[in-house]
Image (tube, rainbow, N blue to C red; front, top):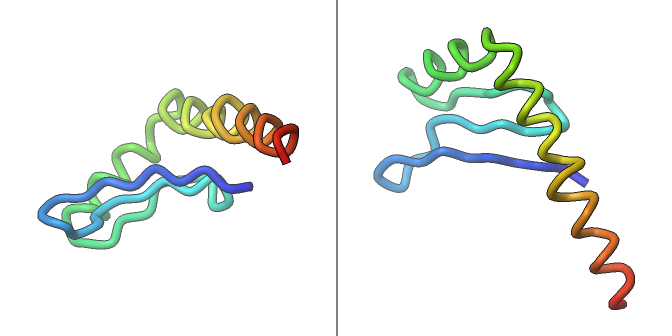
Length: 67
């Protein structure tokens, strides 16, 4: 299970958080700068890492119970 939080502008993905990587990754010049700033904020990273447990693990149990 992987939690992904992507940010787009004009249909172009510029930054993504992936729970398997554990940090933000930038895909454009501006996205790299934004990702670096967000990766330097430990509270933002820990909040995003917790989203996997809050959102994914909670909903996967519901999906398996219905199957």
